[in-house]
Image (tube, rainbow, N blue to C red; front, side):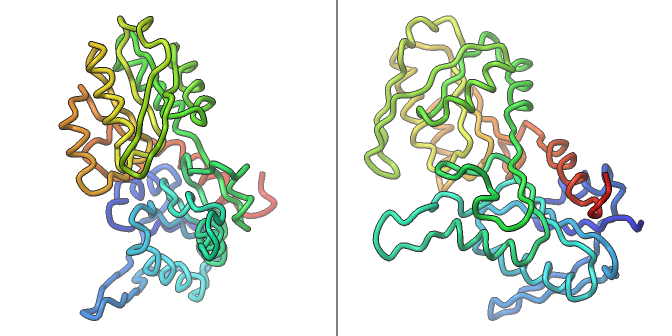
Length: 301
């Protein structure tokens, strides 16, 4: 069987090299060019006929990425690729999973339909499932939602003395408790009332009993960072130790990272699902193990 081809998108070069190395693959030569009118040109300079392709493309800021990704994947299929899979450490368009107001687009379902038409399978990490039982509730292809909890727990156990894990809301309790268990640390979750995208009121139950611990705020996505900023202010008022902020996905809306830094945590740490200066936790091995299974030809054990 020929070696798989790995197609990389900007800011995913490190992941693509890991995939190529650990899957005995080859980096594909692909030319992407944006014309002055904003349209995209795609050309494969590596033959893809009869070969299995893996696209390494994290989908933060997806509106600028989706069409080049779709054009390249469809082109590969047209040129005779035997299989085209997607390794997307961060998966966009998961929040709008129901119609809250008349006339709204349920974009999670629409985006899932588009990707399912283009790719044979999908691997991602900690998507925002919320009201969905699994990715395959909306994706029509094998879609694996992997979890960063084990590697996050390892990092905490190694780097943080006497950690107290703090989750962002009651819905996070199961996820945070799993990290806390693996890190051998206690945990609690915030009582949170959201008054808008950037207005959050929080409190922390029984925080006084953990005064000798290092607070570790953990969340799946750091976007506006308002919850973490409000929590930091609350912990400062209580005289707690300097805080560690951990996010799986470093989405960071405009100005959010700078605002979080200014709020005064001792450390801001994210995984490398999205390239960012805060990346300290590598999730590459998790993605590679899942990709290795999904890229096997049908019928192979």
